[in-house]
Length: 333
Image (cartoon, rainbow, N blue to C red; front, side, top):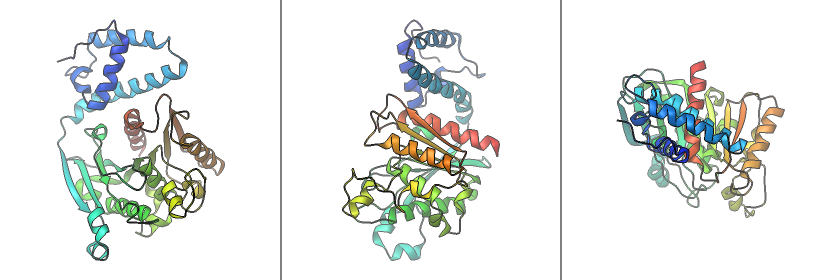
């Protein structure tokens, strides 16, 4: 049954679209059983388009992009609802020998996996939580569920109980676990993506650009299907700077900075940040510089998106873009 929306109120429709994206209500009101848009929603969207034409161009483009991604995925969502998903929790991604030598590792280095049953060759996104490398807990983002993909959510050791490069090593170990085991669940190792927010985005970039961390597990980082960091730090992370008594406003680019490891043969990378005027510190500018330097060294598959009107907490509008990027790359394989 369709949710009743007053088609004369485009602002209400826009709010409902955002709400549906967040709460996974797409199939309840966007499509009929045969996948077509209902007449009332068609009329409402037509009204909304006229309303958006009067908005500043950057807001029109941003809202239109979100709407198009949402509507394109609505039919896929309805199909995905027929798929049964399984969640397995607290799987250790280090072997028993490593865990026996570090109690904190044994306690902290766990992952959860959410995957579609009876589906072959599905794509997988490994999600690293944020929290400044000092906090945060693994969780399976609701906006990534029911998309026909697997989601792996990872806990890693945190400061001050751990020091660099333990955080990066843990992230690499979790990715290595996915490469070694995802086929057991039906996944395709050529379709493994890494994403995360803030500190999680930083970890995604570090293990995707600095090849030594995955190489320690016998894996070439270039096998990754794509990197999709959300508001990740591209200079040396401020917690790592703090470990060396460097102020968090003092920019440093060393071996712990994704910027230090720009290279032409890296996996495709979609950088997403909030509004440059609302982001924390210089997060947009850091990502813009990384995108520029990746281009300078010859990497042609780096893109940068700035979500205007959103600050550092910008995962909400970013998740549809993450899903679309995964689908875009997977379709080409």
